[in-house]
Length: 101
Image 1 (cartoon, rainbow, N blue to C red):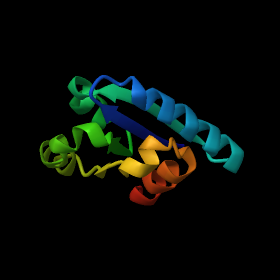
Image 2: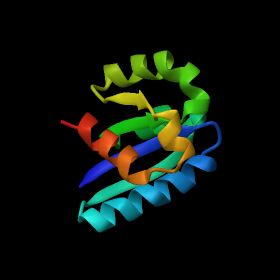
Image 3: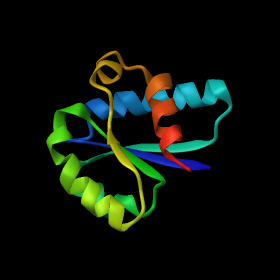
Image 4: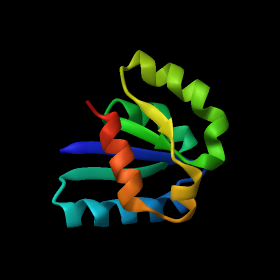
């Protein structure tokens, strides 16, 4: 099972994206665990997941988060703002899966 977490300012809008990603995974027969957390939970969540996608609204945190993630050998990236705004769960899921080796 692949484990993906999304991180945003409060975890609210990203929860809708998570639901779209889970639906896309079910349609494709992909076994995943996907959650959304707020900024303050990034570090405590990181070790239990394969990768992290951060919401476009907190892309300013990428450098900080990347330094922490690199120390744990975990990939982190910003969700494409167009995909995020359009709630393209299938595309965001594909991006996350491509980050996991």
